[in-house]
Length: 505
Image (cartoon, rainbow, N blue to C red; front, top):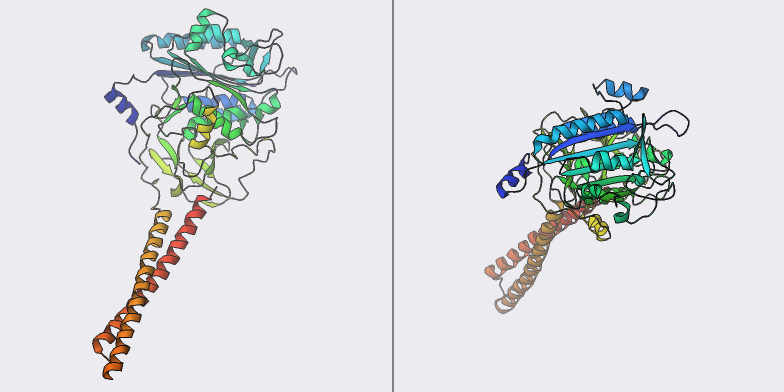
């Protein structure tokens, strides 16, 4: 792989492409009030922290608003995570700080606004997300974020029960199958302008029980989204994860799920004026460590962080590779179907999956222990799936760009791998050549023996030259025959090994 840190930025300067936008990140997570009106969530605070950690590298400024439950307080306080209260009042202050900070960016800023928690719908069909001191409604979203943001691009991420109503209008309390354009139609002209530069990724869930799962260590949509943003969703390997790639990745992860309690239903729309803007740009971010999954690696891989929480998961199509950013943890456990390894990314660069020391896992990794989510990631993600998904989608496919490559760390380079398919082909070709030669030698031997016999009948003596020719053809037949057998067996063995490699999950 080529050294690739800063590669895209260098190309941007050389080609006159616009400079990268300065990113500002606001993440809000609230488990909800323990008032008995609705079940309190467990993981919204954790999901907010982990999404904040993932978006922070490369961002100019970030803000985290959440209230930790007892378990999360013990977990994240050890890491020095400090958050502001998840209230309407504090959010207004934070947004004001963000907009003030953007004033020096000359219109080259982008805002990521993400909220995780309980959602609901009022009697008029307007969606809202519950904060500690009240609700943050669709109207609030329009006025405080969409209209007010001076950023050139806004990214809005909502992971909450009934959160579809944050961007859709409807009469009932359940998400409605409204056309995407209608669902995002704003009420105010000023909001219409704001929506032109705003992209949305919104999860739909009708109950808290379907919103979260201990099997993924948090909200289902949040986990799948974070997996995509690590680079697992970067199907064209340019280091940029666009809206179309995120939507396709979620669809693939969700494709085999039949339990209606666990199926994801998301709305994805890129900003109309910039449909290829990246939700995550690894080439811009200051991410120093990556896990490289080459085409010969096991295709289905799950990563668990040092806290024992699932970090990311991917199931790749045959022949596809992936580059996964490693952030927010000192080490990761890499799990395949029945094996596990630990990667400790101390040096900057990529760590090849094949460079890790795998051991037999104590239990099978194919099951999550939760029937509702066991089918996630059963369908492989790759170029074929993305092309098929986007053919029926209104979301734009990824724009072509230069490949994003990262140099291997000195201890992360993969071992030399034999090109099994090529060796099989070459061996079988050689076997064919040897077989043809052996056949020719056999014919030559028969003809030479005929000459020896004919000469003996005429003269009563053996012709030494003819006898030598017959012996030479016989020797050549033995050598060529042995060569054909050896190379044929080798070619067949290489072919079997290659097929087994391709069949690895």
